Amino acid sequence: MIAVIRVLNSAITFYGWLILGYVLLSWFAARGGTVYEVYRVLATVVEPYVGLFRRIVPTARMGAGGIDFSPLVAWLVLEYVIRRLLLWQLIAPALR
Image 1 (cartoon, rainbow, N blue to C red):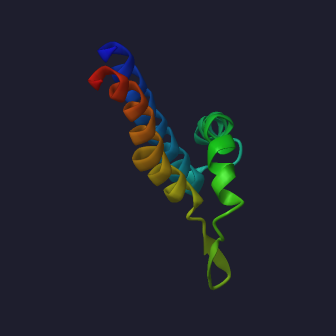
Image 2: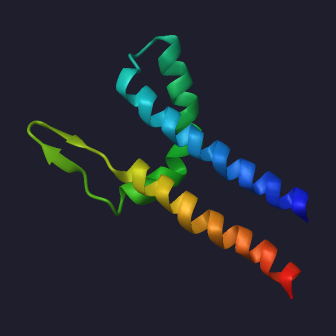
């Protein structure tokens, strides 16, 4: 049981790092370069989850552009809701 908890905890942490990498590379990904290829791979992994929040969280308008806070909200939900619920579902039966 402890091994399952550790694997799930590590997977959630890893996915959080993928979200961070996706956000950072979105600032620097010029079309056609190696960075863009890495960004595209990350987008295929991260975008289905982040896209759920993009539909809910509005983009903050700042002048001509905007700031998308949906990856931050997605990461916060991953860390503080999904991790807690998932680990609690695994730990609670062991405590009974």
